Image 1 (tube, rainbow, N blue to C red):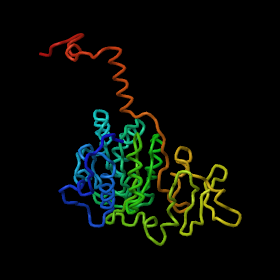
Image 2 (cartoon, rainbow, N blue to C red):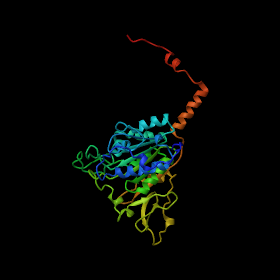
Image 3 (tube, rainbow, N blue to C red):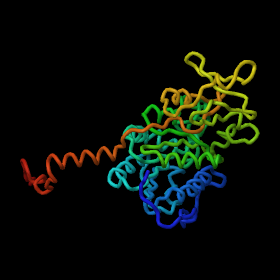
Length: 338
């Protein structure tokens, strides 16, 4: 969350770059880009104080299409670049655009460590359950049995659940949304920006070329209400086209119940973004037994990495003085190499 303010109100057009958008026609990335460009002007931050950083993949073209500063870095390393930038320039609003392969395969360690460190950056993970840029290999989020060019007989890997991974890394803000749920995604982007710490949003996104319909049950108008569970802090877990289904805790396990016949809203679980155990339980829900939760799973506060680092530097200067780089480089033993 940047504290800088903007003098004249920008519009969405101010955040649209002069680069031709080169995703496949119909790609879910277009919807995500549109919502980001719509929300950024609302945040009250000067355009020059935004930075978008990416790794490698379809999602990683994102910085080219945002009329802000940005870096297109190397595979899986966007969180490392973002960490260095935020530590040195805490006044900037830093955003990472990454994919399920970029973040959870080669970038897995960078991903979990930026979450545990809690730098005040925002991570958007586009999850289409496939490697799209390299033409359709299975990814760390592909379901078991997935037949792709690299798994012709079906994947035997058990997939990562990005939201559960983020919660397991002790992320202070963990959320999930869907590419075509415009209002919901906008709300999640605003919440992420407002959060003082690492904010992670998993965005379920369609790849209509190599994995079309992966989340159709969550996006088809006639059926999505029966498969989406929209999380709202302080409200019971209700879903369904007629709002007649809910989630309750039976012993140590969750179960789907139908409202009526002796079961009322008072029997249902009430969502609490501060309850990490509940967030993890909810993150494990999914088809066919359960609906897929979207919304904020966890939102807590703890000191950010960059603020703690700054305090440490101030304390060190007070105790040891400003220091002298020349003396540091020339003290102690030296030697010459012939």
